[in-house]
Image 1: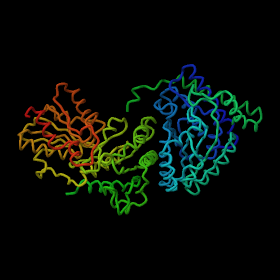
Image 2 (image 1 turned 135 degrees about the vertical axis):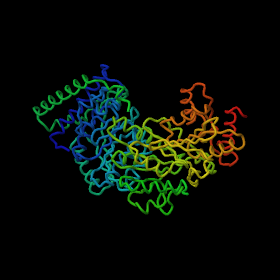
Image 3 (image 1 turned 180 degrees about the vertical axis):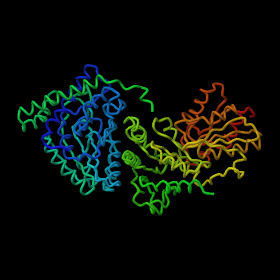
Image 4 (image 1 turned 120 degrees about the vertical axis):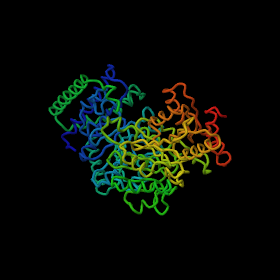
Length: 299
Length: 332
């Protein structure tokens, strides 16, 4: 969808958006909950850079980073999170349930995987040449319907990329308490080719994503991209039980710092200014918008 | 006259003429043609759009959700209605939610067909009528064919619907012939039918005023009709019948109209009594008329046994309907 020059600005946009969101929550401007993408920015940017504009995306509860990397409007997302009529889905969905163009998300772990797989079947039936992408977390691998879907996708040769973002925690439960065997072995068992990388480098993600996406598209088969990543913030809000030493350790793997090394300070400052302006505008405008009205909520 | 099974099969053939329709299910390919033979001939005629699946009900309905969101019109056959428990997430948290939760930006034209019901000795996990679990779920319609409204047309209506439909077929209906008004099969009742994709039928005697209304759906219309004949012949109690095809959302106008004449309500269903379809019908009718005498005939709140004697004792029969009607009318 875009070139390397956009990597830093888009990752920064995701980071600053999520930081602003947590700030708004702590000030009581937002209700409900949210699941921030802070620390995982390289995944989204690397993958969406390698995708086509028309590909079909199914994201999960942690969808803001995916949405912004997809090219989504931060103002419409902010409005949705604030329960505004101008939000992406009129305030009905909130943080986990958004839809725009070919981008969908739902907060049900596992349940979205067969839906995304069905979208791949739809594109195959319609012969559009598009592929589908399903975003899973390591925690999602506990759900049985995931494996029903992998079986069918492989059996029917469906053009879908399964992305597993392993941030090592299912909410507060470390992966050691939730996952037996290996992640790649789960896909291998269904004959699904796997790309696996442990990195915070968006360019490395992009290279792996591009190879996997090309195979999905050219051969019309499912492939898996396993990204070992780090979530710096809480699962949602205030549920981070990890010791500070662990957080310090994983913060070394910061995708923004990694990409920043490649560009000059002037470019970094320009990106910071542009992103700050964009986010200020998004949240200011969204805050002034009318709330979603119950009348409009009745079909 | 065609059986309900033949009309359902014809409905699939009609529906599949639309190239957006995809049919998925277990064991649906020819020559087997599905566990109850509803899908016979479809895979031969439309091999690219009739897809036999692994035993993965949740994934099948999930796939169908994905197809529906991307502009196709899937029909899913669930081999036994009892397995709807496995697809509850896909129906409740996905199919029924998408359109509303995405602020009307998408449509989910999904049909899930599920053969329900007992009296075939299939035991506790292959005999249930579980549709009551899905009644009242916002965004999801529940529809049931019967012998009065052409099941082919009903199925095509469901396929044309832009919202998800759970299509509940009682297994004993499959071999039943469709009824033809005016041939004596309907006890000389006058039959009127509401407009719309899922019509309700009202049956009443043109000569005799009725003492109560029986509201029902699906196969239980067969039992209710037999009971109505018995009541008329043996006990001189005339009844009106209102037979619904759309169970949920509840649109009870034809029933309310009938009750304005008869003043007494009896609901008949095969699902368990507690929190059932009839409970909601009674509640809604009572809200209109708090003094309405009303009662339910339904299954006991028990699992359905394999032994015929135990199954019969659990499920409501013709005699139960007659007894309840007479008590309601003050005859017993």
